[in-house]
Length: 459
Image 1 (tube, helix red, strand yellow):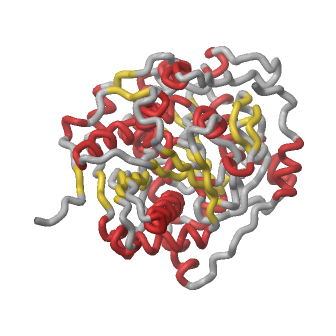
Image 2 (tube, helix red, strand yellow; image 1 turned 90 degrees about the vertical axis):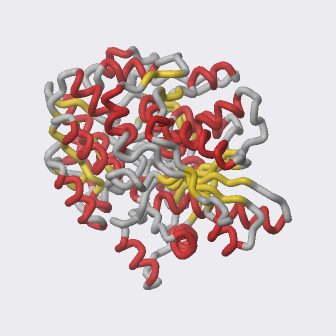
């Protein structure tokens, strides 16, 4: 008999509700700190978000309910690709000669090629229902922009995407993909917003950052009554929507007859990893799986969790967002233009940051070549060319599997494979031809950026 390596759920097993981890964290004594008004430094009230988000998303952002029903219209769209498959990577296990069992939850099967449509579809639905005509957003690697453009086309909304200039130039086919769905794409920073103009005046050759692109998108939303802002990561309602990934994975791991010892994912803002990890984290926080480990991986060139400071900071470079309690490198820190554009963000999800701070999650940072070594090894074993972002998770999982081999112990490893790398061939070409520079983290830039953090005490 051939060993089973794929675990699929039928279409009627798409989750009918998202899982909100915040009340579970509160029950475990981990209370999320509130976002603060940038002027008064007092906790923000929901009305501050009203010019940017529809009411239903604002309510989800602050909800204390553990389960929030998924609208039928959203589930109907999810059915285009959900449930996504869970694979056991037996060929990679053999290549590593490890006793570990390696599983990966593959989100690259979505039409946009990543996990991002899980929240893009939900956000487009709620915005359409609230009467918005257009959504403005940012994108790094282009996966979020692709997903929101697709979702907007499903719900007859216009879409404006500010794409970080480094990725805009590295990934022309991502731009074309976004434009195919009718969205407008601008390389950020642009001269079309006050935030972008300010950056270009200071640095005409700026390669951009997610923080800058967020400022531009928020400015457009705040100054146009028919436009709302849509964010692809970091905030509570985004991680909430992504829990469909982890909820499916829990059921699929039960089909496989195993429980993860360690759950591994990549982290930029936190949506992919939070979506996979939070349903499992709920079991750890409740004491059902107290020894389950969680490993967040990130680029060494933008090591927010491993080298950042837990502090109140702006989510964007232009200082237009509320102050968020999170690990940060400083809101005006501009990461080097590494190929993992989706992980080039100065901050992280407040809830995920708090889990790291409280010792419930570990974090590791990897260099570009370490990541692409793992990506190519995975592709040769499993036949999937992963996105550079996802390859950080693969790197972490390989290290875990090798550690299990060296210790002579069994270990069940679950990877969040958040997307494919079909639009990242230039990055692979650079790597295969030994042209990938080892981009150094600039501690002096971080020190200067952290020195400009708002002076707000944090608990």
